[in-house]
Length: 336
Image (cartoon, rainbow, N blue to C red; front, side, top):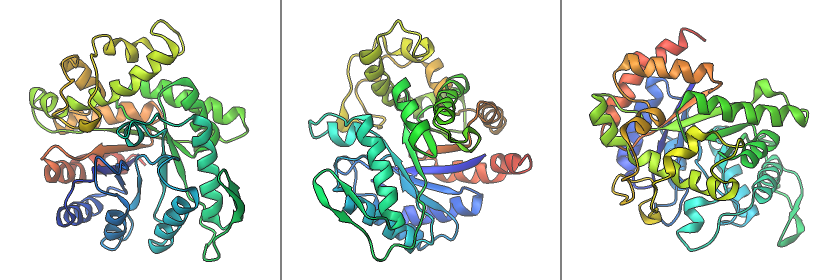
């Protein structure tokens, strides 16, 4: 299993440099950034900076979307960072949940997500590409032929199918092993149906981690199921609550959800947290003592998860990184 960390855009430069060097030394291999340009500062300057302070760490947005940048600009940005870092750049793409909704716009379609993935990857490789709004072919003369890996964020059946058909991996914002297996199986079936190798498909579980008592952990991470619930509410609206297309264990907990404040997206002071119960937090996050983390991560690995990505923003960052480097990551390295 691979391990990653994920920052929001309010991390200060000095602290980001310190934490990413610490994480690379501890055995983490990925550093992801939220890409929501109004709620947080632009992520890509920070990635460029951190590339200069690491040797092996891979970087990328978690997640970007097709609607906030012209596609040639996005591809040029991605290809430039890949070239600058020696090929240590990947993308994760979604429909633009917070990035667009905070501006009063609707998330884009999955068809646009798929087209964006294929066309920006082609431009980064150096191919001539046309796309909507740009009838003349775009081709980068400076391309080095980098084949940029792409992930797609998904929960619902159509999004999971889109990820399996069009990307190298799926981003699951949840660390519940049973649900992760259900999601991963959907993606792999879709990949196989279009002639892709499902064994090569990658599955990321992105969630907070916390060491300490369960009570402390629940309090520190209860914002996370609320953020997930925001996405799940969209699924319920589309498919209905009583459907076999989505597991009831995922949809049931949003019954008492009363709203969501996008200006507080992914933050502990979001006012709409009352529907979150401790058992949901424990299910969705990775909490407890080191042995509890190892146990749950083994369950996630058995469920098909290939990367655990920690949302690193609860004030205990140094301890989380150090403990993972000392007690968690080595346990999985020995089993590799």
